[in-house]
Image 1 (cartoon, helix red, strand yellow):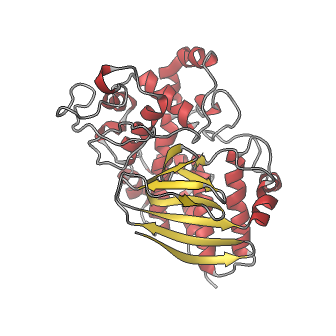
Image 2: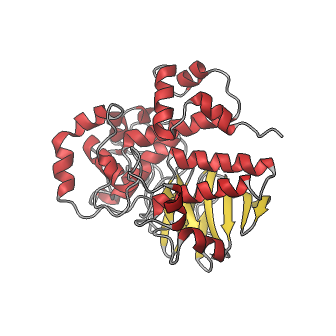
Image 3: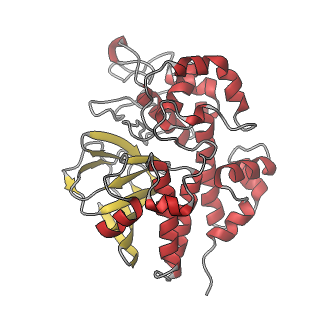
Length: 377
């Protein structure tokens, strides 16, 4: 069951909170998109298939819909809560220029996540003519800056097309820039890869654009890893923490690094998707690169390289992005103790939490409290 609650409407745009309580792995009947819209997930995940391409949409992956597009949806994790921003064709073309989006899905970094949250804060304030409209421009500009290989009207006016931020997606390059970790924050991973990562990627085929492949992740319990079906989206699971060493009952899918019946290796999309699922579910093995690779039955190098190629950011950066998103949830809900928040999310201490949040979002936790606080008249 899907329900949409109108939150606000302005000149050329409408904002809805969409809640879906469906729980099914099969694809829904075809639906036709009626507007240009940006859909960002607040909680949960679901699968979307458009133009024959399937992707898992969750708080780290958004999608753009266009009028007349045929869509199918599946809800393997039991439901989700999303923000849907619909734009008239005139406003869309004013902000994005002519032509369709560069790709239908995009990685939601922490800055785009913050723009989304601030947009919702502005919507609750009631000033649709100015405050909400300005927040909309910020949200769309941040989105388009990650989508388009060339500047768009909105991103050009906002300065959003400056040099890529550490860990941000890089469109149009054969190897994502995130392969080179931000100094000081991902040095452990860089040492693990060493020169092998440079040599391997230098002669590789052009990497898929982040979010443009059939990303695989399923909202299954923490003791499962994703399998892949005909659509390129996870459908099954292997039970047990011993995944990668032993299989469960006959007929259970193989771990992410292997194919059914002992065939060839899984694609990078499957590996990256299974890693995303394990991280989202807080699987015990997701606490480190080596244990996560063992869970997925792949080598640590294969996991690290596949993830970076598929998502456009390193595994280390992505894991911290997920933790930063959870920190934003808590700060938005009024979390009083930064030390307790740091301990709860697995940071070494409050200083480590503050450094990581500032690196990803550009603000300290104290500043974010103010930015996300309800507006007062």
